[in-house]
Image 1: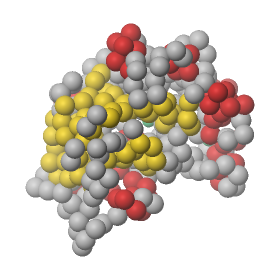
Image 2: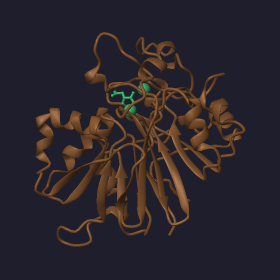
Image 3: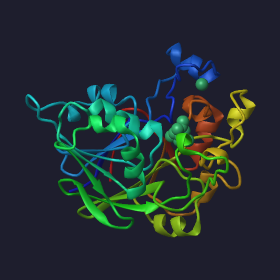
Image 4: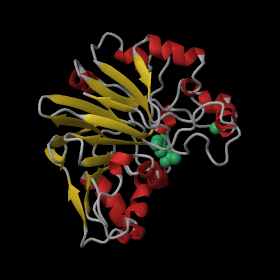
Length: 298
Ligand code: MLT
Ligand code: MN
Ligand code: ZN
């Protein structure tokens, strides 16, 4: 058995184009001049038949419609076995509300992330008699689809935007932001759509990995500020940037990772333009820029 991954949505929260954004990339995507990208989600399978969706984006309805492997196989039979959440951000949990039609599946998440769902009564639309919520302890391995195991590990990050208090720690290590180590038979892959910094622990963990999907939110930390779109830096949002001395491209250089794929790109990120110098630079450093519909096996 090997791992099959399909990127359902390569963009960060908001997507490309974002509904209220008139930035260069969003306008190009609206005009059909660069490919549009939907919000953050990747589907994984070990047997090619049963699938787990990692993060349920607000675009999940269209993402599933666009993916034949996830279509119903009977009247109410679906190849979807589970949804696993890596944090409680809106772009990763709002899609659960679309999956509310009395369809059995399991929601896997840490205790902290399940608490966020439990605090929001709207999620009781996922009827507990058919949708099982399973708590996963850090570093514990669980089977999320036949033959496909997942282990969660802490990744520096912050609480969801709607849970922020006056003081925000952007590189908390706990169970509110996690990465996923997927394995099936002899093959494995990592999924880390949000990461504030690549600490020594993560570096050690990821060394020699065959396939990594990694946080590609921004090209540079002050990209949104420079574009006139607000005051938030990538660091403030709990995301490390691709470029620069403390960026992900530099952090992964020389780490001997097989395949490195950026996901969760914000719509301002220049790598979303296929002809940009930044995309060429990322690709020259061995990275693949994730795209909606892209399939990768490990
Ligand atoms: C993020 O990845 O930083 C969040 O999805 C932002 C948000 O919730 O809008
Ligand atoms: Mn996000
Ligand atoms: Zn935009």
